[in-house]
Length: 501
Image 1: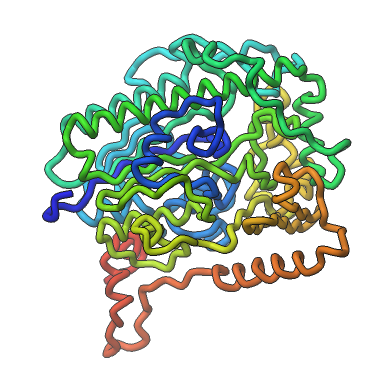
Image 2: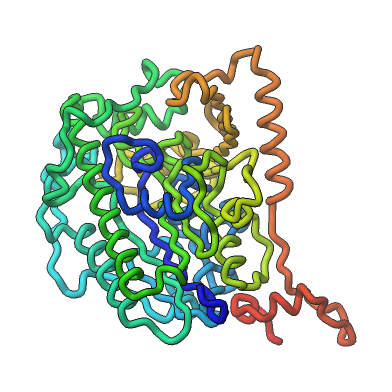
């Protein structure tokens, strides 16, 4: 990397790609050569966890370095606003040219102009189709299993357009260093993909799904309720394998788009000057536990564990995939530190640079995720959906079964996972002996010490992250001066938006 120029940044974010479906993670069947190579050239983390199992709160955490509870970003309709910091805005204010392609689910519409120079969406005018093969009432209607779709299927085409435009930007870059956020809608359900990806995977070879315990015993009741409303009890083994095979095809197509961007960096001669990150906002059931899509207040690894590969110029590749526990909020301080950008707010991510430089082997002892709502918080719930809506099976329960959608928090260590729920059963899993999280041990008296350790970790975490005090002081009299941290905060636009001086 040239010493006289800050590195470019390319952040590639898929939607609903779970970690166990990446080659570098250890999946022997799925073809993901480009994220695998990125992991080999830099670092691939096998245990990266999101802070919420759905998109908007997860992305808000990634962009702010805040856990969802810190400033109320735990719903699909509370995005980062004018007075709140976000990653893109930091880079724009630091003199980077910020290019953003693909979906949003992160920043309120009125903040987009302050956060980027170029906002690219849509399909470039190309006509799309988005029609389900099933009519309402069909047993597969709410399973999200669509199968083969035309080449101009909407989500697939919008992903291609975002990647194509990203490549064009790299070919004709601005004079200043750039930050690119390339969002993809895949492999978000419906499970639908065009050829050649639809036929890419032999259905007989895809792994069988994780089975829930009989009657969903020990699991929160929302899983059983959604399972029944999706009519997943009627799905066949062949259809479950079809779901996984199509999902794999969606992942491979997404990985191809990542590859086109990396290739453009190499062809332009800026690969050595560019930080590249590939990750996702959360995972997907994809048939596991006989469920489809995701949940907003459960934290199975298939929902919370995501792929995360990063290459920072000047850092030697790690010897192999890392088993260290990391969180998606660790991305903000990693990128800003690597690019010499000064933060002006309290955030809770931890830079990965010591690991990437070979100065540290371990990163976190625990990772956390949270979701759901108080029963009385009507403003946190999505709009009531009719059964004709594809998301009815899950989302409508927020209105009709509010306690089932209640608040819950996960703490996960290397060996154990504990989930504390406000209105439903708590959960405790021995991840060494039960990695699929099927046998809830919360009532096992011999594990009292484990529960005490994880409860204490959760308590400490809540105390440490319960709020964020703005760095910008309110002066108490005219002769008082701003201390250094207050002046630092004032240099950022999100503070100027809410102050007069």
